[in-house]
Amino acid sequence: MSGLELMLPPFVACMILVAIHSYLGLHVIAREVIFVDLSLAQMAALGTTTGLLVGVAPGSGTAQLFALAFVVLGAALFAATRTHTKGSVPQEAIIGIVYVVASAAALLVADKAPRGADAIKDVLVGTILWVTWPAIARLAAAYAILGTILFALRRRFETISFDEAEAQRKGWRLRWWDFWFYCIFGIVITFSVPLGGVLLVFSFLVVPAVTAFLFTREPVRLTIIAFSTGSIASALGLWASYQSDLPTGPTIVCSYGVVLALAGLARRVALQKASESRGADVHGELVPENKAGV
Image (cartoon, rainbow, N blue to C red; front, side):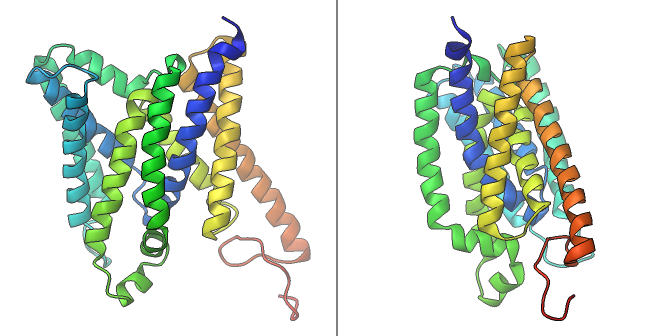
């Protein structure tokens, strides 16, 4: 098998994953719920291992339903624990608690379930190098449906994520919309974690979004930068993995770290130059000089 035949399916799968995860990552960063994907991934893992415990075949449609059921439970919990005021328990703490408890519960269930250890390992590592074209087609179809829903609801989700005060002023039921957002998010995670593993999916979600926020706060530009840098990092990781015969998932994760570091360096250089000629706004986003020279 040639290098192109071996690496083309993982590359296409990465592009599909980056397309939807980089966008969802913008909401995760804006909402300051950084580890929500890890928590939902562990809820999905708990659902999968619970299915094994009652005799459900791994990888079957029923196993997927078990994972989705636990993800919906997590979505409901995160929506119900949304906080609006300072001084209350941060939602990130609730997310961390759910992650720890779900992880521990999954280990306990896996200890009693047949092939439970293999299920936990698949959640951590993934199988992206051996992805097949039929699996890619199913992934693309599922994400096309979810992407259409996200596009249709983008104004509402973006307002809640980026301007919560405006959403409250309009009288929207934020917990209700949070529930639907986390449900969509959880379904995406349910499809992606078995393929990419927790570490890789976390990188797809968070690193491109963080990179984009280094340069702008405008949603359209954020989306473009996040997808572009995620695509570049994925391609570099796959190339390095093939050239150096390294594990694919960890290599891609490291390439995301390298791209983020380079982006941070580029931002620092750009801000330094801007401070000498045009100035920078209070958020560090580059802006044109106004008539007053500020």
